Length: 153
Image 1 (cartoon, rainbow, N blue to C red):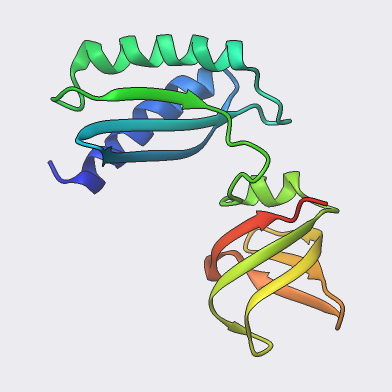
Image 2 (cartoon, rainbow, N blue to C red):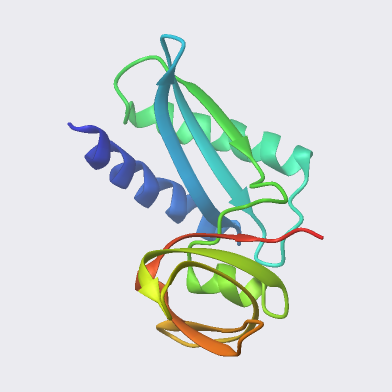
């Protein structure tokens, strides 16, 4: 199975488990580092603020679930952690969580002549994020967001 297929299979399994625990999957990082295979799972509570003890508990539970069916098929290191303060903003819920905060957007194509935009999230719709920038209001289609991060003051 190729890397992307493994990640999608893992995503489904992990999201199922986290959903039962009322937790959000933020990201999965699956790669070799220094000759060892790592599976890093970034999780958070819907309202944010997951604790280290909660991450350790989730690590233990996910390890059992993944090892039981041998989804990866080789030795790997599982790490479960919070996304941290500079968490990537990926989903509509991520943008909703940052409503009223300043965010830097890296776009897949230019909007108003810019490939990067900074602004305060005013509202979020099903398909777009509406931000207030110094020149004025801008609508950013979520599909045109390559990457976004909250600007920490």
